[in-house]
Amino acid sequence: MYGTCLFCESTTERDFVALRPQETRCDSKRTNRTEKSFGLGGFGLNDFLLPFVEGRKASGVFSPKAMIIASVATAILVSIQTNLRIVLLLGFLIVACGVASRTRWRPVISLAARFEVLVLFWVVMVPFMYGSTVLATISLPFGRFQIYLEGLTLGFMLTLRMSLIVLLFVGTLSHMALSDFVGAMYGLRLPMPVIGSLLIMLRYVPQLVNERRVMHESQLLRGLGGAARSVQIRSVGFLIGTTIDRGFDRSTVVYDSMVLRGLGKQFRPSGTGFHRSDTLLLGVVLLLASILCGILPIPVQVF
Image (cartoon, rainbow, N blue to C red):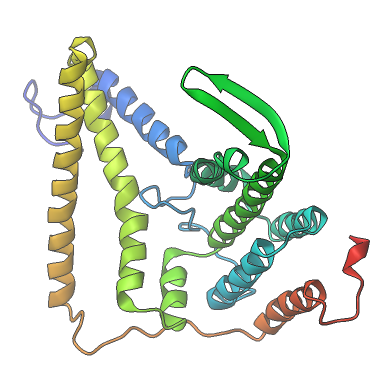
């Protein structure tokens, strides 16, 4: 099955595993570690940044275009709310819709938690820079920092709203395939450079990270961990530069092959259309927006 070996004339599958058991186990562990690192284990599309439903049956109740429009509208509603109870109510509705649609919460939450690092990076300084009511004072050798109550409240609201928005989009994209997502982008008439940038970000960022991790693990097995700190930093710089250069060469080859197949020859792929059931989804979002914005005479203060 595996061809001719250096030690014998023919090699069976059992002999091949017996010859290289250590490498087989290492490859399996490395694959599992790569899947767990991005929270994509089980999706079948481990080289993308978002949990697309590749290898599984996508939900055909609503069209991908309507799902994206409803998600954007709901995200806008979440972002403009200043009442904590209303934000919590919207979060409850998002989770309830996810449970009703049988969302795979473990990989979705795992991937959304990785985006939360960026959220916390932006809001961590808000309690120190905004407000007038001093809640606490931190004395350091190079100065004093004051934590304001208004800034702490604002930072909490920003974190909660952005977390719900990230969870909403990641959960929505977990119900559609990559082809459905691209078709919805074409259907919404987004510019081609925007769609291309999204695909590059979703495809090559995880691939570059995975390649850099594999090469770094290979260097550690060859004794790089015992080298000086400056040597390790220089080696990491070489790895990043080599990985980016290889990714650029690979993308150039892919682009040339796409041009040979007619890309850019006055041709624009047709996007996906709407379904009849999309009126229900968009109607629910419109009704929720009307209630929260005060268009319908329903007292929101009850929340």
